[in-house]
Length: 431
Image 1 (tube, helix red, strand yellow):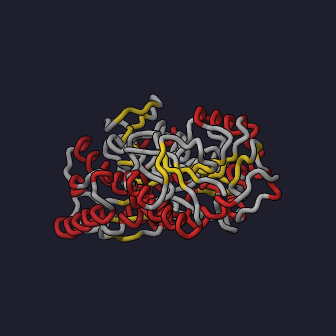
Image 2 (spheres, rainbow, N blue to C red):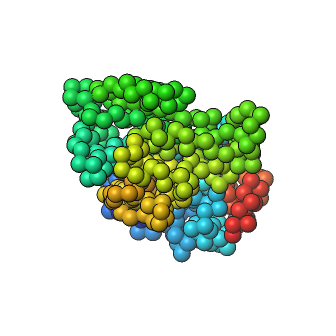
Image 3 (cartoon, one colour):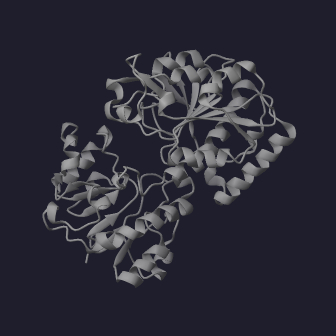
């Protein structure tokens, strides 16, 4: 039986999440006689004492653990010949994590990535995405309120919002939004707010769940231009538009119709972005799509230039998915919860902290779920728990083909005993 270790998160002061909460650790100990070592942490949202009460061992290190669960990446100098499970952020060949991947290979370790634990249809089974949306939408509207005041001198009801981490819990956040909704319905907004959501997955659903507390009217993407040009806005409502792939891109061949599976297969080979045509009619853009360099960008750097002039309707971009210079190419760097905004200047290709004139403010927080650490950890843990017993009982010394694990977990093994598995050999070119 493998000894399970839970690593303390130390990427930054905001990372208070844990992959398995004390309650679930206690259940696994009692029901399956598993052994847990918890690396002591003063930062984690759940205290050492909470884990100890459930029967876990608290230690300063995880030297005696066989399988180590974490949330964020593990520094290369701490990697040894063990089994690791965390969000590795290597599957796109991310340059900044290649030294870590190389160290895992050199140490003949094993890496399982939560991001690749999917069902037969490719849908992720273990994720924080909805919590990124729940947290991020609040930060985006907080930033909108600040931007309107600091750049245009206009007070809006959104000035009453706090940062997500300043709320006691998600329920308090929702209560604030209910008050905000009542205020909008009572007093109205001076200017119309049209928020566009790029994507419709877990991240987008989380963001929409918060936005929908407001008095929302939804607009079909195909009606956005005509609706906006008519100018018949209700001051006592906000508006939302949800964009799917068919709205984001179009085939290079004008005689070809959009086909979703064809787009997934060929990406940039056969399709280009057409999202630019919607931007003049949005007030806020929320980016919640999965992106890799196989696909067109949502907004290229040069496409920002028309939208940084005074009087332009597009006021802010909330890059919840945050791939550096990715789908939103002007996201030059990520931000932190207490300083969530950069302003991108497309004429100098630079980004400065905070709000500046003649630039596009972008909310680019790189680990939004950490702003609701107890709740997001509890949700994540409730899904992960069902796989822990099988991982604890697995014999990781056998050949890969003989390894007995649920297919969802086995398919998520990127490195096994120091070798890239067949699904991930493409990563050699990035190493």
